[in-house]
Length: 321
Ligand code: SF4
Ligand code: ZN
Ligand code: ZN
Image (cartoon, rainbow, N blue to C red):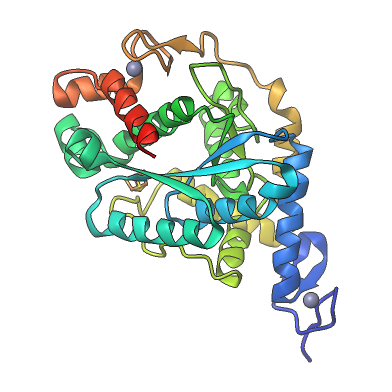
C-alpha cells in the first residue's frame, strides 16, 4: 500500500518524521518554503527594504538559499544581488560558474562574479602552495574577505550564506568538544553589522536539514554542482559529527531541530569574544588584530598586503555595471 500525502492524498514522496507529515513533491516544496519564511520571521533576519547580498558558490545550499529568497523578495520588499567568487580551481570552478549563471538567469537576479585569477593573478591551488597552507584554510580567508569587502562596497545591509542546520550543529558540537564557547556565540541565525567594518550574515537555512535542502534543490530542478571540490576533505571531525548527528536523529527524531532552536534561543548565554571588532590598519576592514588575515596572507604570498588594492578593484567591478 502506498502512503498518501497528508495534504492532498497523492502518493507521498517523503515522510518528515519530526513534523509527522507525509508529503508529495508539490507539498514538500511548499513545506520547505513555509518553513524558511517562518525562520526568517522567527529570527528577524531582514527588514523591509534591505539590500541582501547572496554569496552563491554553485553548491546545493547557496543555490537553494538564492532560489528561496528570489521567491519571497517581492513579498518581503528585499533587493537581492548575487555574488560568486571564481576560485580558480580548474574544471570544478568552471562548472560552478556555469551553474550559478544558469541559476541567476532562471531567478532573474543580478549577479557579480569575482575571478580570483583576474583579481590576484592566482587561483586557490597556487595561493595555497605559495603560502604553504592547506587550500581550505586560504580559501576560507579569501572568501570571507571578498564577500565582506564586496558587501561593504555595494552597500548591502546583510549577507546571506547557505549554511544549513547540519552545518551549524556540527560546528557547534566541534566547538563544544574544544570548549571554544566564544566560537559557539557566533553560530546564531544572524550576526551583527558594524558600519564600514563588517556586514552581518543571515543564515536562512538555519532550521533546514541538509538532506531537506538537497531534496528541495532536486525537486525544484535547481542548477547546482554535484561534484565535490578536489580539495574537499574526505575525513574530518566535522564530517564524523554530521554522521553521528544523523544517527541520533534516526533514533531520536527531532533531535536536530530541537537542538538548533534551543541553540538560537540560548546563544546570548555563551560568552562574547573580547575585542572582536578591530579595524585592519592596512585595509580598514574587520580584523581580530592590527592586520586582518587577508592582508597577512597576501603579504606572505605576494610580498605586500593586497587588501586596499582588492577593495579598489571591487569598487571598479561595481561601478562598471
Ligand atoms: Fe575552498 Fe576547501 Fe571548499 Fe574547495 S573544499 S571550495 S578549497 S573551502
Ligand atoms: Zn500533496
Ligand atoms: Zn586588511
